[in-house]
Length: 135
Image (tube, rainbow, N blue to C red; front, side, top):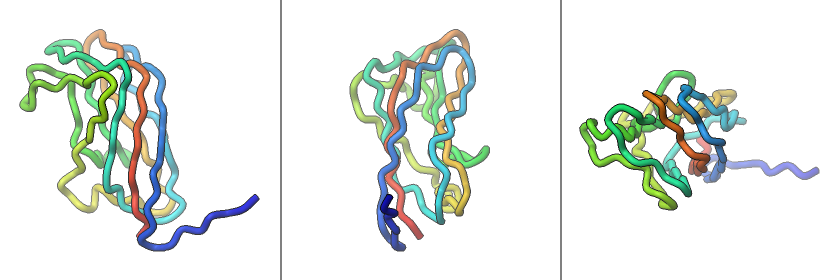
């Protein structure tokens, strides 16, 4: 088996598909960093999508341990960025954290997708694409 060695500055795209999430906060462990890297872009795609709702909603973020690497995206219609539906079959860019240190992974850090459910809500299965750069 061949091994691909990544050099500093090389980019990699990490793809992760998650199953549906029903009424339960869920953390999907996506990736363990083989060396230091910086997350540069996060794209979320959900074929079904999810309508906004003030009492039954999800909040999605990319995390390193309990640190949000992206700005949490919520489908709460009462939120500050309303409307916040997850559009069906559309690529949704998750905004990166404004704190540079929050976007870095050290060797061995685990990158996770965190889905926080409020009320009785189901997030349909979806896909996350993460663009990262080795440092």
